[in-house]
Image 1 (cartoon, rainbow, N blue to C red):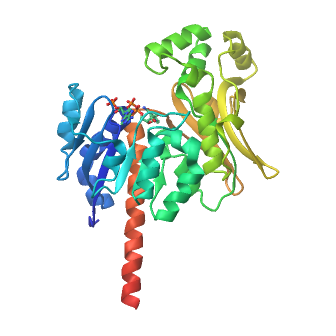
Image 2: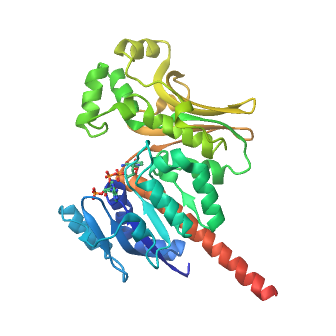
Image 3: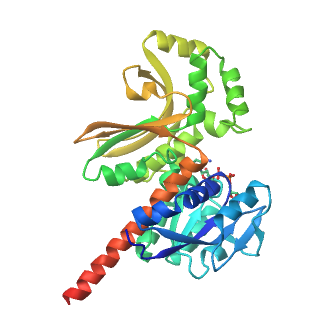
Length: 355
Ligand SMILES: NC(=O)c1ccc[n+]([C@@H]2O[C@H](COP(=O)([O-])OP(=O)(O)OC[C@H]3O[C@@H](n4cnc5c(N)ncnc54)[C@H](OP(=O)(O)O)[C@@H]3O)[C@@H](O)[C@H]2O)c1
């Protein structure tokens, strides 16, 4: 495929996911050009404690990855995230800053400013989606650009784009699934005979759970994903506070064993469903029959079942976290934006020939 445009990128955040995406762009540079007609140049990379690097001629990403890998700073350029996003030549802003569910910052101000200036935004940051999805969607539409966030739910495993694009024309009545790998890992290890506290400690040792695990075990992370599914897939924006939320802290080894004896597995299930015209979202531990695809999802893997009018149940299973795995979500959104722009250009060319 012919490369028609070199897309100017600005990374805000260059931690796990930012580096994961950068690694994919370096590793797949030729394939992205030949198979997808996609070529890009990174003009700015901005961190918080590690400084910032701005190079209008383009940043050598393999070299930057090597330097960051050795613990070196990004650079010493003085530029804020918003200033970097608005630099001349930036077409796509990649927001890979930490998720902040209280005020959405720094991602929310960055996203508003970038969209306002007509720049596309791709992100795995759940904060702005949770707090301001309707506003940001409207802003993107008004400015003729895209706001895409596939990586916010199930990392690179297609979930939002699957429902919106591949299932286009189907009525999705419910999305339910296992969208938090940490709690699923803990529940799986409890089936292996560990008490809750032991399984949680092991998850922390392996880096699945953070030092403060409450975001995972109290169900907040799953709740924000249920909220996003309700807003994006079922078209009903809800507040995070309106998601009924119960975590796994009260589950005992005996509960897990008793469920197994009944032919069930306990899973932390996030659910967004529409009934009688009302959309609700919830997170709670549920007993799933062993025959259901979600019951077979163990460890840190994620899965979602979409219940649709035309196809019945469609289940997707895959990684729910990881550097390159989440980078893949961003990459697929970037390719979708590039494909959309190419189609628009072809339409304009056809129209100009016609006139
Ligand atoms: N990791 C995953 O598997 C995964 C999966 C799905 C979604 N996500 C989401 O993806 C996002 C990124 O995750 P991550 O794991 O890459 O996080 P991370 O490793 O903690 O990296 C965060 C990056 O953001 C930068 N940053 C923080 N505050 C900033 C600010 N005010 N201005 C500019 N840069 C700032 C940090 O810079 P310094 O290093 O310079 O401080 C760092 O480069 C999060 O929203 C997360 O919830 C992650």
